[in-house]
Length: 219
Image (cartoon, rainbow, N blue to C red; front, side, top):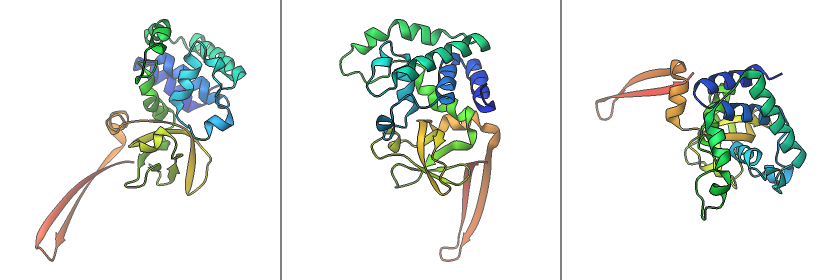
């Protein structure tokens, strides 16, 4: 069965109106990566996996393991039945997917809900929420103080924050295998009760001024 974090993600995701995205992610994260190794190295973005699994011709994508695409689809359907997940968003998107794919210079992704991937991953792995390090592209710091990095070739390298699902487990700075963007406002919303406010007041002997700084951190 699913581990506790994925169950939590599906239950809360369903309440948020993203039940089908939740079970798609649960199915993806419960199995081996749907991307072939050579494609996965520079693309840890979970949204890529969701797009492939959902696309009608996704099993024919050269980046993907064909058998695993079908396996993940079947697991997603099983979870939908078992957990009673219903959501109109994916149904509407699947019906329109061919029209969307034919648009020239498409900038938006195939599904309206897919940008919630990071928020849902954060629900499953709250200890793996990470903020970008200042002036250090592709490097992040997790809420536990450990470092993480993504390939320079990945679009995730430019993100302000990530929700990370899998890494290589290195103790100091781990390589991100699977993750998705999440914005700071969403982090604040999801973990409001865990945000610690710190007020610091210092005296500058040179200028004779009192400086007050308020910081917020995710405990």
